[in-house]
Image 1 (cartoon, rainbow, N blue to C red):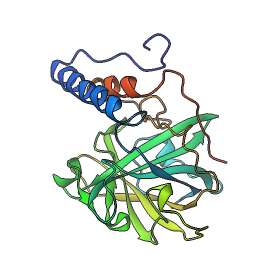
Image 2 (cartoon, rainbow, N blue to C red):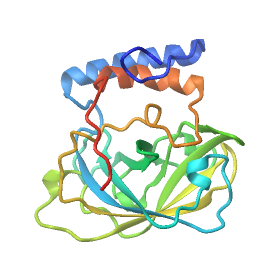
Image 3 (cartoon, rainbow, N blue to C red):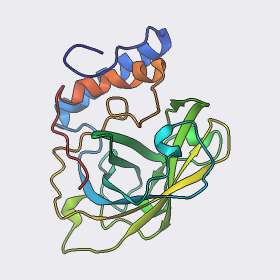
Image 4 (cartoon, rainbow, N blue to C red):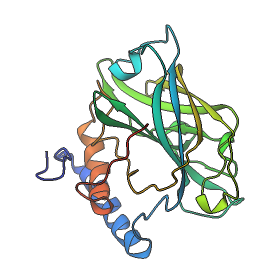
Length: 245
């Protein structure tokens, strides 16, 4: 661990370190222009539950492969990456947080393609419910690389920006969570149902899938090297952590 941050030490992989350095510099500039979030500046806070699908295809990650006795609470944030106003197309971000063994576990998703190779590229959308979401970077499980994805089953979020909210909105946004190998088919493993949360303060919702990994997963060294320098630039070393209720 890097002292005082809880962030694993970076890889010595030259390409990943170079990419991470460039991304970190870009985030540093962005933070001066848009503080404290250079991307995904505003987002709507959602909450709900994750329900596992029985007899789902195993992934090699313990958190995905377990089947809890009942629904698991989740808190989420949906946002537009660049912050362009609707109805202009933008890359959509969806971050989920659950509690696992008393600790936060984060899944960070962005609108991507669904098939190969499109699942490794970001895609802008006008409407959130039409987006397919993926992690872009794989987790390391006992069976090898694992991607996590999500797609809408029904409904849509009330907003991606709290300023768009004019009244209480009880609509439910339901998504299917799935996992896949880098080149393989998607396998559904859970359903997440989200509604607008009464508390739209997102101060404690700074997500980091490396610092808060899914139980049974491990970040690849090159993923840490590519991601974490930019996260260290824009996130506090000891951020407030909001947990699902």
